[in-house]
Image (cartoon, rainbow, N blue to C red; front, top):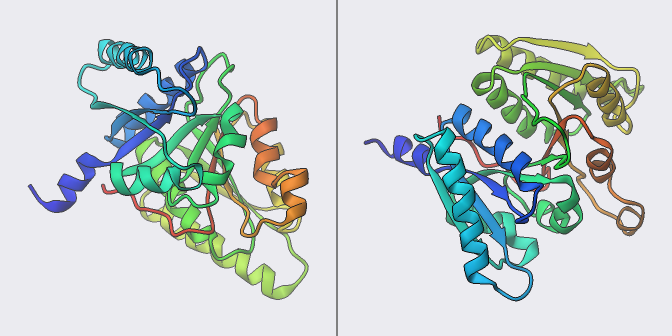
Length: 273
């Protein structure tokens, strides 16, 4: 077995469990991604108080049994840990070969510190949604930042593995240098998606790079998309901490679709194919 094949088998889709009814939606989405990406699914619980070992392990085993009843061939692991919040995602990526974490939108506040240091994207879902998103259509608002190129990789992964249709909306900035930056990202995206024959539509939006994420949210809502891909904040000020980051507001408002947040402050880990 080649090393790349070995590493591909080790990589995991991690589900951040709370051991409550909301876990069912997260696990459904995690299984869907694990099957399509051909990865192991890891049921992860972060211990935050007294460690009730028997209760936690019994619940995770119950989840694993339920997954195997419907998908007997899927690889399922369990992990219980008490990581420092800021380094939680980094530990999962470095020690567990995690490539993506699925979490409920209610957990955003707890996980926000980890997201700022994360080398893997976080997929936030509405735990109370009637149906898990199918990822058949995804919306990607593109601003001028060079880190959009990291997010492009995940757009391609979903297009290839989940057969998603990609709807990209480029920011409409007034300054010529900013317009060139956005156009460069959109050209790179188009070339990549054409190469792998991923269905897509690319539009020039009506708002600037500062507000294109809001236009992306409205588009995802109107088109009944399964997911919105969002590049997180590059800098975080004291005011941001008080009023909330743009990605936090989008995650809170998203009811019918998932939000994949890619951290622009860290180089994104790649998926082994």
